[in-house]
Image (tube, rainbow, N blue to C red; front, side, top):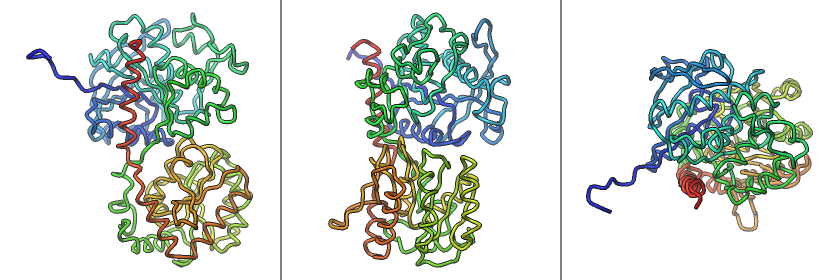
Amino acid sequence: MPDGAPVDQPLKVLMTAAEVVPFAKTGGLADVMGSLPKALRQLGLDVRVAMPKYGRIDDARFNLETIGTFDVPFETGVEPVTLKHTMSGPVPVYFIDNARYFNREGIYGYADDGERFIFFCRAALEAVRYLNWQPDIIHCHDWHTAIIPNWLKTIYRADEFFAPVASVYTIHNLAYQGVFGYRILEIAGIAEYGFLYPQIAELANVVDLMGRGIIFADMITTVSETYAREILTPEYGEKLDPLLRDRKERLVGILNGIDYDVYDPRTDPYIAVHYDVHTLDRRIENKIALQREVRLPEDPAVPVLAAISRLTDQKGFDLVAQIIEAVLRQGVQFVLLGTGDQHYHHLFSRIASAYPTQAAVFLTFNTPLAQRIYAGSDIFLMPSRFEPCGLGQMIAMHYGSVPVVRKTGGLADTVQDFDPRTGRGTGFVFIRYDHMDLFAAIIRALETYKYRDVWRSIQVQGMQQDFSWNRSARKYVEVYHKALQYHRGK
């Protein structure tokens, strides 16, 4: 290299997503967006995040500062944006503030959601131009930002600012695709390109935004290795498996991590007593504290089964519903935290009323209580029909709660079925999506729980697993470099 030549600049990555912890959250996407950018920053990348400025985001609480205002080309005119900024740890976060689309209390569920997130994407691109900060990679997450790879290959293709920029598209859950009518193409300014899926009958006359992300991105990732294989099949592909098979050489599964700054029983501010793998005897005090808090009899010998989840069929609650009373007849306690489908609200409320000394049900989401459930439960249930990654089973293991899971997606990649012959394993795994198979796995766990030394060894093996973001972040760096190579035609 000649004298005075600049050293390699850090890779510049713009992440775009609809929700980011701690600003707005409905699910695991927000957790990833709160953790992955920090891990990439620690590897030396210049990672920045863009998200909408929803009405629920308090400027004063998060120290939001206004950078400036600019107009965004949209449909046949322009739409004004105020660009705001704050730091989330070491990560700069930019907020697209527009009263028409985002000054609302909720995140999703509006009739104009398609238009809202198309506008967010256009504004995010124009924001980095306004900042004169040219990313090497734009990393898009889920259907809300899937139009960006499409645009980079169409209306921004000849734009000098964006022409060198490669795209990575991450599928967090293939079931939520962002399906709209022809009008969304007009709003996005790409109506001249028409529909793109003539080979898929169900998608021939609709706009599937996730499908466009898959088709146009330079690289595609999803959130576990097993899920990356599963979505290539009709069973798990949600009608997009033909598109995914066509681009499978660009598809990589990278397991999500958990943020040990947030989830650590040694320092967790919400739990009664701190502990680690070397001081596991202290954990029983958290169990007693949990039983007291949820108003169940305080008995360290009784197994406490827990679930923290959206209450939907996808999460396996149709299976749980069929066996919950049979499980309670085993003499266990059951603690449930979550919201979801109304028929599950009614079902579990009835269970709590019928078994007041065994079942405690909280139809809400409460982060402090969730942490205490991880720290105080013995067995953690995740019997999902499909699970792209799942964070609950990883958090549970780190806190010494032993998971019972179905062998699918990220659950298959993170939980090793306990084998009594070898003593190896971190949980109890069943394969068929069947309520009796779930029941059998729970019974195996309860029988093993009677042998305290064996149970302790399962807890220890789970707590010693490394689910930090560091390893996954390094894999994303590899994906970014591949995306650049593909984008440059190499």
